[in-house]
Amino acid sequence: MILRNTLSRVIGFLFSLLILAGLFLASNVYGYTNTSWTSVFHAYMAFDGSNEHIIIRELRLPRALVAVLVGSALAISGALMQALTRNPMASPGILGVNSGAGFFIVAGVALLSISAQSEMIWFSFAGAAVAAIFVYLISSVGREGLTPLKLTLAGATIAALFASFTASVLVTDESTLDSVLFWLAGSVDGRKIEHIRPVLPFFVIGLGSALLLGKAMNVISVGEDVAKGLGQNTFRLKMISLLIVVLLAGGSVSIAGPIGFVGLVIPHIVRGVVGRDYRWVIPYCGLFGAILLVTADISARFVAFPKEVPVGVMTAIVGAPFFIYLARKELLKS
View 1: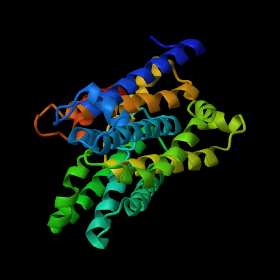
View 2: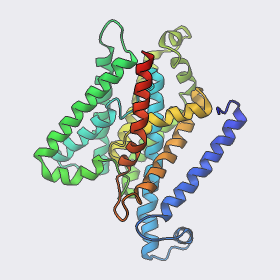
View 3: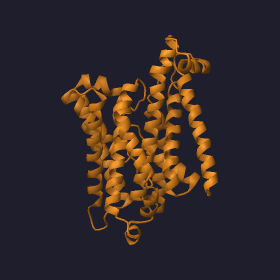
View 4: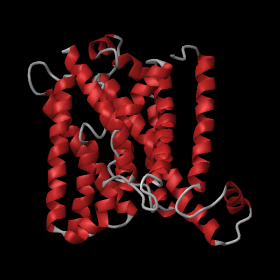
């Protein structure tokens, strides 16, 4: 059922916000170390330096914050990419942006021994930008110009190319493999507040800017010719949107690794809930993306308990069948 009027959308948004708040607190409670809801309350209101309180404040709180930020960023990136390209399978993972960012970070670790979060950010941004530009250029070649099918094929090609580059680096450098293996699977485990601070300004700029593009996305999602006819500067909009995608996807990869399928799945769910008005789609994507990744992170702690599964594996379990469904749907259309 689509929420069609403003009141129902506001109520739905507030209800979803309450769900996210509950999941955020649950992420602070559940894990390998047994803690309770009371322990979480006392950890913030009456910190006593106990092992439980340290785990909650220094391990689980940053982990939950990273899941919220990364989930929101990836979902909004996917929504922008799908609107711009009019391709239902567009997302940072499918179109190679995550792979490009991941390769640049791995190369930086192997060749320049980078380790600080502030250094990884810039390598991640560079890789995301290079991948996005290459995909756009390759898919624009030919008389037909950019089409959804060509964009998907170009994205898959660039993603595979950067994945092979990453594998080549890891095969020849075992020390780099050991340091980035868990990160490459997509993980929010082990993150601390110190890891969040350097990337937080880029998330704030990217998320804030995306929220301002709702009206423009409504126009361009109908078609570029229509947008131009209505006086919209489509080139400038594309460049701004590309910059936002690089900030959000690149920042996400730098702090949590290349987590896939969030940007693919969430925009489709959101459009099924609130329709195609991007003034609502974008904020709802941010909220639903955070809910998905926090839920996946909590589930990842218990699937193979007492060991943990990388959260990227959990999102793949949900997203892979959805991707197959979308691909089959597009083939049937053609």
